[in-house]
Amino acid sequence: MNNQTTSAPPDLARRTILVGVCGGIAAYKCAGVVSKLRQAGADVHVIMTEAACKFVTPLTFQALSGNDVHTEMFDAGTAWQVAHITLVRKSELFVVLNATANTLAKIAHGVADNLLTTCVLATRNPVLVAPAMNTAMLDSAATRENIEALTARGLEFVEPGSGFLACGEIGDGRLADEDDIVAAIVRALDRSGSMAGERVVVTAGPTREFADPARFLSNASSGRMGYALAGEAQRRGAHVTLISGPAELAPPFDVEFVRVITAREMHAAAFAHLPDTTMFIGAAAVADFRPSTPASSKVKKDGASMQIELERNPDIIADISARRPKGCLVVGFAAETDDLRVNGLEKLVRKKLDCIVVNRIGENGSGAFAGTDNEVLILWPGGEQAVPRASKPSIAASILDRAARLRTGA
Image (cartoon, rainbow, N blue to C red; front, top):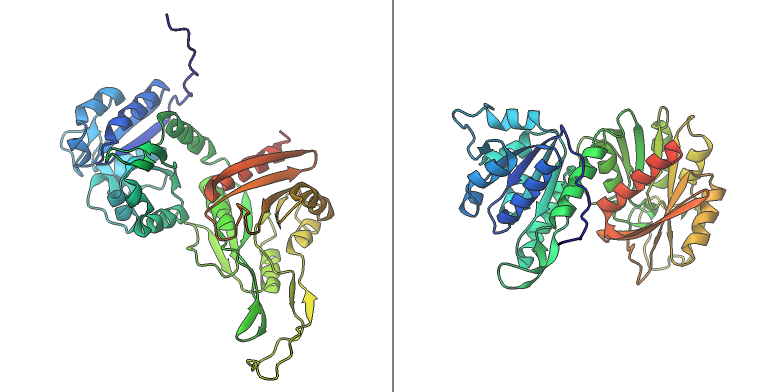
């Protein structure tokens, strides 16, 4: 007799989910995900690529989902006509399982040569992608660039696992576990629309403070954290304004984008967009100082002074906190090399913030400005939350989850 207990399945009753299955050996694992979703009460509709049908038959997914499986752009005799429109309109979430490098490349570049990729282009619902491929393909520059581009557009990814691969190698690229995928689906559905009606302003990236037309003071911030926060808030239904210093990133899909260069420009833009703001997130790495007398032409190095006189820049987040609209939640950031909790709490109190996100920087800091992942400490009056190392989009989700709980007093 087996006395082992299992966790109850999530409640997905009356939630309609569109699942895409791609052409890779991990297609057989997708059957388990579809089964779990149906057991949880979801109405699941499956799209299979031609290559996917070579690994698992459509009949398998028809039996598991209880619905017709779609493999062609115009399936004759099915209940849903013009599939790439009707499928996406009926569903609340599009889950692309065992996404291959080929499918990711097609989606990233807008190629619509099969039903699955056409539906991704046609949907306005959240899209969750679970990649599965050989480690070398996953680590290739092209695949990484495609994932980054899709993340910027608002697609969410379930990180692949590590282990024994079908090619006989051991490494990253395994399709994530069924439970992890289902949990990500539940989170995506729960978040969708959770910030409807919110007006969110996010600052991101570095600022540049010019000493002359060729030289400036700045820092190594990539802007990834702020862009991830803007994208996550938009996916949750908020109206988002992203005010960004110089960053080599594509703005997230469907956000109002304001580009600035200096701290004073960012300060002015922040206050211009402050009226009616319900949440302000200061994720930018704003330069604290600027040259007091910048030269109007390039200073020649021969005979140039070795000293530059500096003056303070405005403290954007402190000024915003002091003049915020009624009910506006203000979230600050702090980059520290040591004493994260002590320094973070000091800034939290001094700047009168609702919460502050502290990350470590330095030679061995996981929060290196240019990194794609991070680990942070979120502090608020009377509480704290350590968020373990994860991708910056995942960290962004945790930060907004905490902000939502602070708003409700939870």
